[in-house]
Structures are given as C-alpha cells and as structure tokens.
Length: 238
Picture 1 (cartoon, rainbow, N blue to C red):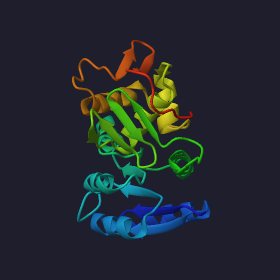
Picture 2 (picture 1 turned 90 degrees about the vertical axis):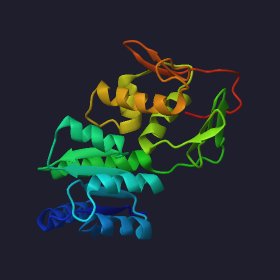
Picture 3 (picture 1 turned 90 degrees about the horizontal axis):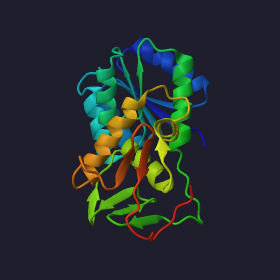
C-alpha cells in the first residue's frame, strides 16, 4: 500500500520541490498552505505522515502539532529554519516524531520519512496478547492506552514508544543507545539528552513521585529498566 504524506508548507517553491522528491520516492502527496488547512486535511484524509513547517500562517506548526497529538498518533516530522536545540526540544515536547532544519538535504528527508514510516507501521500479530498488567501499570497494546493506578494516562506517541520498549524488555537494562535505536530508529542522530528528556516526561505522568521513581528505574551510567512490581498477568513478545 502506498503511504500518504501530508505536506504543510507555505513556501511554494519549497513545497513543490519537496512534493516532487516525495512523489519520485513513491509516496502519495497531499498539500496544505497554512495550519488550519493542514488540520482540516488531517481530519478528512488521515495521512500516514505529516511533514509540518513550524512557521506557517493562520496557525503555526507548533500549535498544529499539538492539536494533531490531541486527536491522533499520526507521525509528525517538523521542519524549521532554526536548527537550535531549543526548537528540537520544543517539537519533541509537543509530540513530533522527528525534526529537520532548513536548508534540507532531500536525500536525508527521504531517509527520515522511510525510517518514520517503518517504525510506526501498524503490526497486529494475532497470537500476541493485547494487554499487559503489572502492579500499578496496565497497557492495552491495541488501543495504545495506558492506565496507572487505575487512571488512564495520556502519553504522546514517543512517550508510548519509550515506555513500550522498557516494558517489552522487562528484566533487562535498556541502554540509552538501545532506546534511541528502538524508539527513534537506527538512523536517528541524537544524544542521551533526548532519552533523558522523555524519561522525565514519562515519570511526571506515571510516577507518584517523579523524583523517587518506582516504575521506570535508572541504572546510572548505563540506561533504564521497567521495575516489575508483582507477578505478571500479561506477557508480550518482543
């Protein structure tokens, strides 16, 4: 099945060039020239990926990204003219899956798109259980819903990926490098600060006291692990 990509961009020259590259790579391309049009297209067309410029009219890309995350797990690749780390962290905090700064190397763009679509492709093995429960944590893999101490907790797609990686590798310490590879993809270029950032986000949402965690534990200098609290009531294949 051909993946459908929504490109939200108000720079006509850049939009046309990007559309040509993506079309030649084999994707179906939808376009929108401002944030409101982009949101309407997300609602109506359900694309497989959104490439979203941060600086677009009517509603900026940051707000569009936040609203997409409120309604969907559709992956978002943010594009800005600013390559500063603060912008990257802002994008990731709003739920973006990846980030590129202009001017863009289109070979890299295609590689990033391919990596995002590979790791977000929906896989539903029939023989694997759809739920996991241990202590305060319950996860429904099919709906991607998480309950902590009986209350549903809203995780961003990347937060869910990080937590899933730790749960599916329970009993093992997952290194910073392994988390980067499994959650962000093998071609993603980042450092430990991104992993630490998402661990901090997760702990704020799932720990009673984020400064004294009981669910996601740190092995200093190595990585993190999911702390089993009682006998498992659900198992998950890795």
